[in-house]
Amino acid sequence: MLSSRIDLAFRNVEEVVTREELESIVNYGSGVGYYGTAPTGPFHIGYLVPLGKVSDLVKAGVKMKILLADIHAYMDDRKTDWSMLKVRTEYYFRCISLLLKDVDIEYRVGSDFQFQKEYFEKLYRISALITVSRAQRAASMVTRMKEPKVSELIYPIMQAIDCDALKVNIALGGIDQRHIYMLTREYFPLLGLNPVTCIFTPLIPSLRGPDVKMSASIPESNIQVYEPEESIRKKILRAYCPMKEVKSSGLQYTNPIVAIASLALIPIMGSLRVERDPSKGGDIVYNDASALERDYVEGKVHPLDLKNSVANALIDLLKPVRDYFKTKHDLIIEAYPEEVKKGLVPLP
View 1 (tube, rainbow, N blue to C red):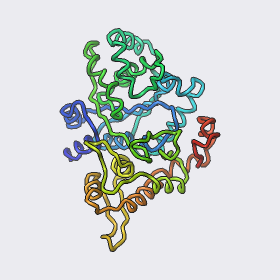
View 2: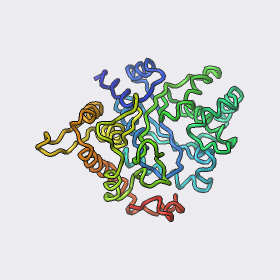
View 3: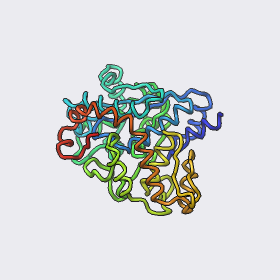
View 4: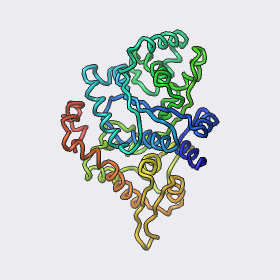
């Protein structure tokens, strides 16, 4: 049982800093971790990767918190206007809590503690130690940084301080967050604070392939979590899915369909049934992503069979969100009025 908890903690991670620390934390049952997300753009399936890892860590015995980082959404070049923070935070909370409805999680909102005196004191102290170039490097993969605002340099420093404010010893994020969370490793000891163990997950490539960014402005590149069934199926069937190809190197996926199956569906749903014609060997149930990826590379799973199976599983997984927003679609319209008007955000 202990080894299975360790396996869950390390499943589908691109890097852990450090592996020895995470093993010790899981072994002793002393893990308190968090995943933070800023309520900016519409919620799409790319978010399923860290949510799948949240589920893994809870099963591994880690107490997990999810931070709805509302202030960060404004600090990132005002991706969310100050007047929209509350409604988008509510929208993100509904999306996440419906997807992880059976997972024991504590939810926090950034503005509930980021105005406190103790928080600002630590923010001031660490800011005096970090150079502008180091702050830029930390922010470069996450914030817009077109014409860098001062707020975009404060953003990663706040994210580091959040780890202390939330009293966690594990920080979970995509590999694009690496430069931010490493600030805790570099600077926390100088303030007498404990650095956190960092878990970084891979990213799902765009449905149109690794050369196209998954973006709300490119509807065919992503699937939003309340899209109609027929839209999900159409996008998956049209998606880039090269035969026998999974990754370029390490855990850098180039095949978005395999990535969705491995990083999201299997961790959250527990397994994935790939439906095949009886003459091809019949259905296979995968509860291990590595087995699915091996069979795909060896040609035992055809891209069309995988696409149909992933579409069916996604439709099933996203049903609670879709059902909720069918009666609450006003929340989507209120959170993203311009995007809905332009047809970039579908209504269920």
